Length: 69
Image (cartoon, rainbow, N blue to C red; front, top):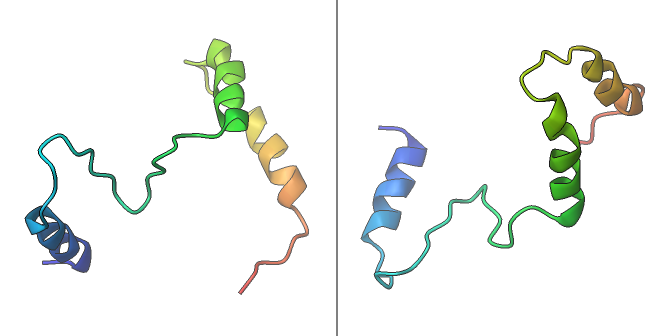
């Protein structure tokens, strides 16, 4: 059994209201920010296509940055 599986097993036993919405550690209770929603809405018309050219647009601002430790 993995550590995440053990954590999930414990979480299921914790008391909570029957109508509670349980979120995991990587989920935001507020949902995506407005900038993220706008970005998704802007790219939807291009859905269903392999937009390999967008990889360069993503990588360009990151090029030359040093990883934080």
